[in-house]
Length: 519
Image (cartoon, rainbow, N blue to C red; front, side, top):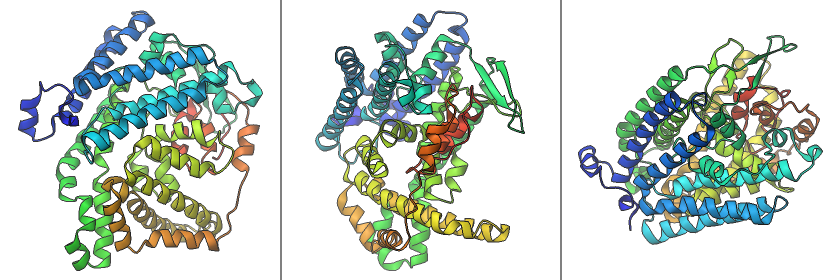
């Protein structure tokens, strides 16, 4: 059965009117409903007015209803995956449950992706039930590791971030389902830590620390309950603009045109380069729309507040998934990754990069490819991403310091690196969009695999400055847990395939701060 008919057909007339697939219409309408439900939830079921049990029940039932509306009986996969994972945690015990939950959740997701792609609708871009399962898989695995860290491992064995995120008691089945299937995040996420989620549901206050400008003095005060209205309105404005661009510009600049025979035969190299960049840039607004709307929904419910900045302004980006300005003006491959799909990057870091004992960058990219799905294009993009990441790191370590002492020289360097970064990103993700092997190789061959060749030459010519700074700093920092260690993840930035930096800067002002570290 095609994905477009798995959910409710109640909105079919609207689908016809706006000329969009019914599943996309269902998704947008359900997210708008979730936004209204979030406002109602914060107003009438605030933690000060009702029990956490009622809040858990309501968010879970609403989440399952939205899932059923969008995906029909396929929504049972969400409950089955969560239920079996919970059963595994109970019977296996805290010593090894993180391994079993990881293998089961990722395996179950992969089986569902295989059946959807190769049996039902290969190449279908429309929303499908495996999308929410990707988020649930993140939650299942990250919580399993957090429980393992909190209930089995010794305190001194944990990194600062693991110590802060560690869960010290087994959640109830209701809490577990609420975390995985709540209406704020079931359709588009984003991932959040279990401790942050439970703190939100239970309405527990916590102390924030805010450093003075001189960095020497911390001021403690109780967190108030600020209004998210301004943040929500701002994010909805971004959603509207992103949706408008997607419905207009994106359709006029298809990525597939990069492999059009006539275009490749007649267009000059500068035109091909320009179109590659513009077409891939135009493909991003749909992600901006979905992730920003999901963030706004959580904020409207009162979730996502991470504290106040040094000016006393409320920050509602605790679980934000992207930073558009830093993405579009990224001057390094790492900077782009740091600001794109931030919560997934943190998940990859926490369950893979900081836990594996060899080739963490390669293993992290492979896990990311497996999690995204089974299209060959994903693997081509992520394997290319490994090369680009390693090469970019080598260039940065060996060259950048020559250009940062003089402002004009640095400006010139930033412009060149911005152009190189945007071209590298566009080149890398083309297979991610094209999905299949043949069109992907058609594109790369038309470019003579130029970026692959350049990256290999860079890795052969430039010495890799293997630094242990990130790891050493991570071990030496003073654990001073925060509601969410934003700075600890800054530490990961220098060594890693990256993607945690910006996400960690978010929590910089949150309760109990870490000294600044570089990944």
